[in-house]
Figure 1: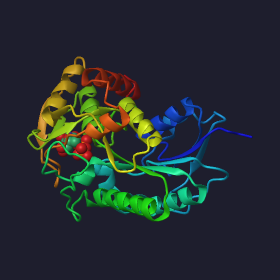
Figure 2: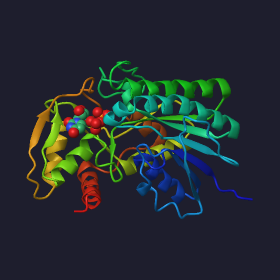
Figure 3: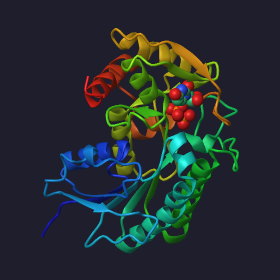
Figure 4: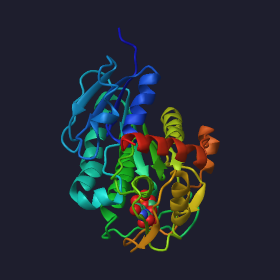
Length: 316
Ligand code: UDP
């Protein structure tokens, strides 16, 4: 009999999904990776494809999901996740968070599997408290440009808690704050990939607004560790995972520019997108207390690894 634990990871060809797939393979799991590849990239998992313990399904989870045999865990990480992606794909974004989550909770119920969902700091919207603890209800504009993502994720949390409370499904909810590292798409529109690719190409570095808005960037390896611990914990309420090291976007742009050797780029200021959160910083007290987790990789180290990845990706 095969005693290996089985895990389904949706969004497996994406930035976070592929790093999670690596981690679960390393831990000896059988990994089913699922992705419809609208934002995912097979290059992120091509090293896993030959493995006996990795099976890939090219499938859209907003349609009925079937997995043969037993299933121990489900990690729902499929979704467009950058503001320009969910502006381009508003309906898919809403469907994967709502219909997709419903299908996967149904699968979890049928297989008696534990399900962890990827929620987001966007549930806090443009927050009126900083840092954001899990108890904060948020300040979200449901019909603004970010509403499709924010509300899909809020619905996802609500549905997950409903399945947990009503059907007794084992569920975990991680609220992910800005995360960066290798396998981010160069053109995904987010601040760090944009700044790195612009600096490497000697193009203008586009800071939106006056750059005084803040974010707190977490290295992907730290995030994966936090998620792995949360899945194996017995805590069922949402947990923030992120790095509380808060900086302004202008400072992030300056740090990237200083890191990119010989770049002749200049920082230019562009209009601030509507509803762009002015501040964002996780309160990670719960993650520390419940999971014994806190980030280990500092920005200097994480930015350097990311810079090297982008250089290679851009063929430099
Ligand atoms: N941003 C920027 N220039 C860019 C891309 C993003 O100044 O080329 C800003 C954006 O307005 C936001 C912050 O950087 O204030 C982080 O944006 P990102 O898209 O990475 O993710 P968000 O945290 O807003 O979801």
